Length: 481
Image (cartoon, rainbow, N blue to C red; front, side, top):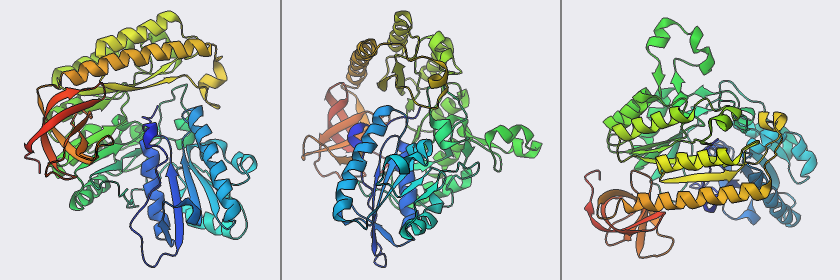
């Protein structure tokens, strides 16, 4: 499962620096995981060359695109509500065209045109380069659909535009698709087989971001730890690669090394990891390079071996513990977060208690917790009855969330009295007199603005905390500036 963007951040419309020669207006919204937000930047870049400037004003748009998520039913419901809003605007502006991008487009395909009469084009995650042709089809009065999954497309040759929100942090996509057939997950069906991007193109993108003043990048993929580049092709083809290709292949630990050494003053994060694929050399690379942030998002999904097996998660409870122990041994101050699904088919109270006990062992810094939502087309939907009553799912989810809040507070309290390095990202939501940023463990820190500015690395002494936020006083600029 992909890490979900906090719902308060969902639905952000993308705006880039306008080109004077462009005459058409594009309004684009993104929902779901970080990959969707990254993909929207690719789409905006492609359409910028086709005469579109982006706008945050829906009413003036010539083209409206919504980049969708299918990982939970709630995400799809949110998109359908947005389409109702677009429909209301389209009654006033009948020339406006509406398109659906992303995983929901891939899952529903032609059905979207039948179910949502407002929709003019449907475009899957691997077909964004075809958008100019599809838009021409729509402008000629025909509906347009391209949801063909690719075995090669990584968009490595597209230079994404960047959100103008802070100019500090950026996503850099390194893989697309997923080969791990977790029974609850739609990603392999909506994003296709896993393929990795040329490491040289990744390093060039990171270097370009550094030259433009960015201070932090997140290497992005459905499963970054299975990154493998040996000259092209799907990961499954590696067994047929030549011995020379194998000897010179770059895995994820090697990519981390390349990026860390290319920009030693740039913070490096990555998401998302899979426990079955995270190897010791990745943890060793994190420990070796100080600019690789001490934070890992490590979805566990369940603490029960029986449920993990039904989910087709290729790790056991004990193997997960061993991985956690390696992380804590090599990176004692590493922040760790999780994904957990409660109420998976056949989950018993004993299985639920196994999840709670695993959480107590790890004491995660924070997490993303969901009640099981059956997704059409997945193995779980085909093979297992959704037999855990909703009231039990809700009760178990409440217990998991409550325990995580306890652990989050425990983790933030450990920072009190310590000085941490914070990259200023934006103004605090609660006070215009304070800055907000994150420490290497990805915990939010707020502190008085004084004379600092967005993009500064600041040393902050922590005075107080909540379960989600550290509160401190600045003590000076970090040496990373």
